[in-house]
Every structure is written in C-alpha cells, then in structure tokens.
Length: 425
Image (cartoon, rainbow, N blue to C red; front, side, top):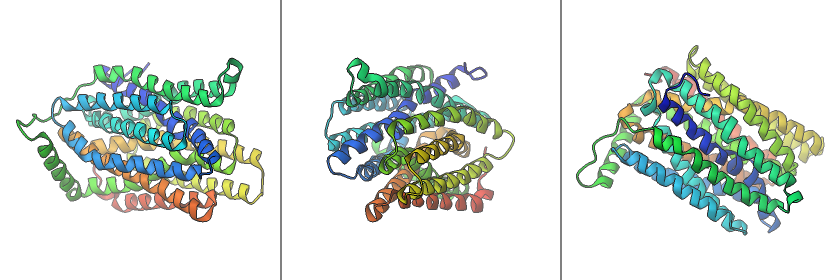
C-alpha cells in the first residue's frame, strides 16, 4: 500500500483517508438528506437552510484562517492547533449526534464543519514540509485518491447498510444517522494518529519573545500584500476562488438538490458510491498526467467537464419539474452525473492544492495556505448562498443550479487570460 512514497508522505496521505468520511457522510450524502427531511417536516425549506448553513460555516472560518495560518508558521504551533481542531471537531460531532430539532442540528453541523475545515487548512500547509515541489502533484493526488477509496467509502458503506437494513436489528433511520455521525467522529480521530505522530513542521519561524498574536497579525498582513503583488499567485488564487466554489457547491448541494426534487434517498446514496470508486483511479491519473503536461491544462479541462455536469443537472431537474420524465429516469441521470463528477472531483482539488504549494515559499506555507483557506471558504459561501437565494425566489431547484455554471465560467476566464503569469517552482 502506497509504495513509492516516503514514510512522511504516507503519514500525510493517511489524513485524507481520516477526514474524507466527513465529506461523504456529513457534507454530501447522509446528513444533508436527513437534515432536509427533518427541516422539511417542520415546515422549513430544508435545502435553503442547508445552503445558508454551509455559507455561514465557511464565512466564520474564512475570517479566522489568516490568523491561524500566521500562527502555525511559528515552530511548535502547527501541530498543537492541528490536534485541537481535530479534538474539538470530534466533540462537535458527538454533540450533534444527540440533537433532535433542525435548528440544533444545523448549529452542530456548522461547528463540526468549522473545525473539520480548519484542520484541512493546517493539513494542506504541511505539504511543503513532507515532499519536494516536483512530487507535490503526485502526493496531493494520492491523498485525495486514498481518501475516496477509504475514508469516503468504508464508513459510508457501513452507514448506508445501517440505514437500509438497521430496522432488522431494531435500529430505525434516525438512530442509524446518529450512529453514522458518531462513526464519522471515531474514524476521523483514529486515522488522524499517523499524521499526528509521523509528520513534522520543518520550515517554521522562531517564536517571538512577546506578542505572538500581534506578530501573527503583522505577518498575515505582510503575506496578503505579497500575494497581491505576485501576479502569478494572485491570479491563480483568484481563479481558484471561483472554480472551487463550483466544486464545493456541487459537493454540498447535490443530495439536497436531489431531495428537493423528490429523488429516492437510497438511490442517491448508491450514486455517491459510484463517485467514490470512479474518483480513486481518476485522482491518481490526474497526478500522473501532471508530469506530462502543465497541470493548469488539467484544471481547465476539469472546469469544462463541471460546466457540462451542471448543464445536465439543470436538464434533469427541469425535466422532472416539467413532467418530461419520472423519478426513475431522473435517478439514472443522477447516477450518470455522479460518475462524471468522480472523473474530476479529486483531480481538480488535488492539483489546485499542489499547484498553489509550488507557487509559494515553503517557509511561509502556513500564512500562504491561510489565505488559500480564505479563498476556499469564502468561495464556498457564494455558491450555496446563490443556490439558496434563487431557490427561495423562484421555488425551482433547477434554476438554482444554473448559478454554478456562471461561477465556473468566471474561474475559467481568469485562468485562460492569466496563465502566462503563473510559473511553478
């Protein structure tokens, strides 16, 4: 397993295996469907509040990300904050599992999402510590690939089995979802241990004698100015802001969109298995292809495929709303869309992470990835917010999905016109 990688690279890759259970169970599949049904049963528009909840979580984290990034560049603080985010994230899961009202479910989810996302920001900043610039694409892609085949699949399969067959053992759907939330927390905690024990901060700055927070704020401001002045870094991260918003919106809103259209929950969960299995080889393929061509070409190709996915998603929803076809045909289209998403989802995320790592100085990776996190999280506000707003205005989920195409288009345009300035180490 993971032959050809160093011990530190393998430990780093294992954190994708650890945290991926959250992205599948909590972000994409089981919890969104459960939340939409609970909120809808209490007379609320479930997918609208799901969109606002995701936007709120990302907004709060984006505010804190630059300071977190600046602090973790000091020796000794990266590992401490990494462990704390995991610990508080696990506690948030356990609290969430005990809630019943949709309001408290949303609060618990927002807290869990914030700590999970903060841990990812710190995790990403370790990439320059564990590998060399020429290996970053391959190592980053391997992380996403093993996350899909392990963390995104094994606990997800166990959760689906509980939901589908739990009643045979006295476990109803609500209890099965609560067990799934706890399972996510346990999986995250156990498989974080290799990363915590095996990866070390190499490029940290000495801790200032006084005024750690003040110095961190100053460093964050200086780094922000450097990013703006460096045209290649600035254009890449600006393009990333838009296209990764589209990626994140597809992940967080896909099952909520299907639930709003009335698609069968079990059918949608099955489709997401397809995404995980397709994403594993395709993520590795993106890493290998990046050695043969400019990784920007692969990112651009992935954006174009996502535009096609969103267009097909619109026709699926519009056709169902207009009674052109029924739910059986729509769920088949959902499966096809899930397979298409799998071809690009891991690849575009992995190459974005590694490309940014190759553009920045390794000794300031925490600060730079702090700003990367800002763009990631503020980006993920725009899509869910637009989706929720258009849905609230029109009452048509299919119209809401069109906003994602526009977001991808902006990111694509910036990459196409700015690529001559983006030079990798």
